[in-house]
Image (cartoon, rainbow, N blue to C red; front, side, top):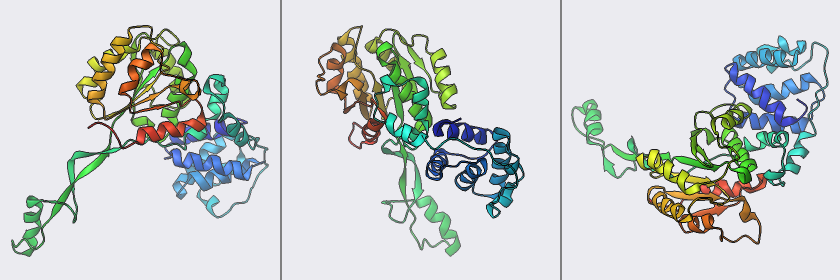
Length: 356
């Protein structure tokens, strides 16, 4: 594990398997700490993990056990909770090679996903874990008490009035709770889109909030991958390839979108949701069919975001049959073709303008 991304990802995966609550925020802090400290010894790496991944003596015990197993490092195997104050190595040290990963990630951040090899894409995991996929909020049917609420909660007012002899001294009010809108991702996995599809699927696995998304892939048929992607990045992407039999096949966007609407979307999944379509718009089916299905989707979804890596070119025009048919129904079109362009995608997903 000579690179930082693989180092942070593997250790955090082991800690989660051992029961330690290591979320995306802690994993990102650990990666940044290693980049700043540039540890040359196992003990230094362990202290970086101890500082950023634990919050109690119990957490430290888990870290010490897992770390000793992963690195076979006797000096941390018995550190446990006492390491919060000890900070001294009691055994031989080993060199850990990790300081060059930060510059590697910075270099890859400006390269098109289509030019990255799978090991290079894996390097971006730590960076992707710092992103947060957030959709606009919507009012739910549930309510909560609030002094500034417009509506009176008579039942709660009468219940509290028991304490004052039945006199409603204080009027209780409530407001509707808010919850994030659903996120639905439809990912084109045809030959021309394969590298971008892998990058977006990895983003959904790594980024905070990505696990809540409903994910489908399509080329010549529609495949639901939501459960498959609720795993570690490497395992999720491997399973995604097996689950989607038409990976790197042709593209029938209109047919696949129609299948989604018939089987899932019209039944509630797309209603009021933010729907992201990742595709370059090369439609081998009927563009007219795609236009009709996009019109159906626009009547259900709150917001439609189309991610097309071809739009990064200044010469791009929505002139292909599929893209031209879909364009009028998109609330935002972004490229999402490399890491430093992902922010545009996240901003489009979080946008507050949409259809209710």
